[in-house]
Length: 256
Image 1 (cartoon, rainbow, N blue to C red):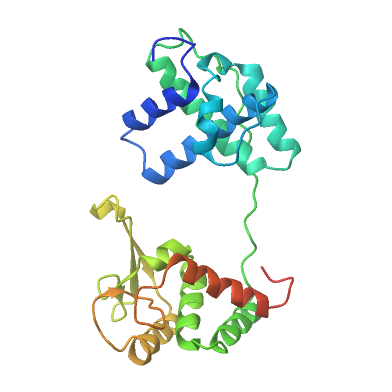
Image 2: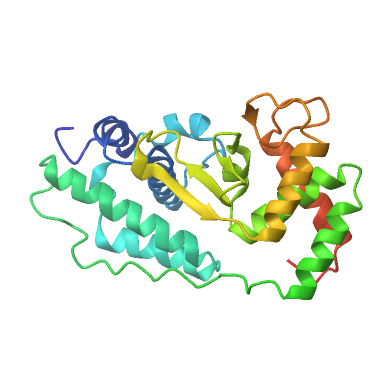
């Protein structure tokens, strides 16, 4: 990186290689936001940008660091807000700010061209907690599937412990499941430090459901993924998604 004539995507490659302090998932999100900004600038210039990043790269090499101006970034954020993509506007603005600060540190800019940028607030899109009767209906519906014990254990664990699908998928038995003490251990396996382990308490009902699942379904007792498919292999990300899609299709439409 030597000048404002450097393509944004080339600078982004250097940014990716140098930011070892960021988690992989965070870095991926920042890169995606900067890509979208470059694509927006390209479209404003009449460049037809393909959906896939690898296909768009040759066309976007004409988008340089000189386009990182306050007016251009504000126009991009405004375009997202008008399309009701307020969460994306928040995250992409943060990504662009971080990237631009890095460019200042690399002495591409003498001063930060986005010093006056206001990052929009992230909208509060949190779902309301399920009512008790909703949880009972969800459990009953999950239990009625062909893999009732497993699906109920997955759904109840997700709701009671507030776990994402990827966190469910990365639960290992027996290392992460302490039913005697009533805890699950959620690990950031990329970090591999004690600080990356989150201990989640289990209620008695959840302990009973998990215990029944392990006793009746996960009968092999082999260490490995907690939740298995019908062949005894670790349940894939698509497997978890299909369970929740199937469950949603059987529940009242207004229940998210």
